[in-house]
Length: 292
Image 1 (tube, rainbow, N blue to C red):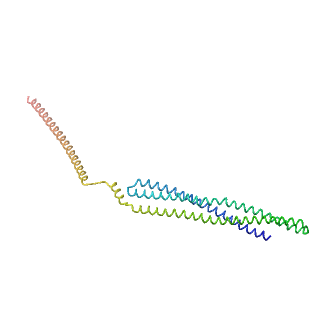
Image 2: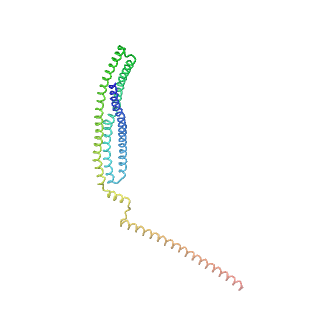
């Protein structure tokens, strides 16, 4: 019975080992898969940023346009590195984590097989104890029960040994795999960030060296109106000509009005003289009549 209790303790440790692997490898796999998907989404968003930078650069003056296009090229290069990062994470980290699902299932099946053998051994032991209490003098039945117990114990011992080797191999493989998978994870990240840091540095330096003063001068030359001396003289001549024309027109109008006024006055005077002549003729006619 002590052997059975010892095997129970062994099985609990083995079951705990497999259960912990199932729990934490599942969590690792879920988190790393999400990490990889989000990295891929970040790559896609950065590609959008590259597109917008190029579109915006095409609307700007030469210096800024060149600087932004160079920066966009550097960012695009980083996204190539990030794409490689995503593929390596899937191949070297996520997929090996996923493979532990079937491996853990196999180990649970072996533990279940051992438990059935152990339970059969426990039943044979309990049966033997009952026979010893009920029929202690029946040596034949007790001998048969002892043979069954011995056989069950041999099967349990053999199964226990196999399970020990299996779980020992599983534990060794697990710690080596966990070391390798996270070493690959760190290596992938270091390679990406090392290359990206170099590219980011080049992009930053190129952007800082951009001579934005030239673009400002070019912009100001486009929005400012040119007012040279020739333009001023031409504008003054045009103004003088306009004033002379206006004055001439004004004088012409005045002359015309004056002439009209003089004509009207002459006409009025002639009309008055004609009226006076008529009046004189009328008076002479009246005077002649009176003389007769």
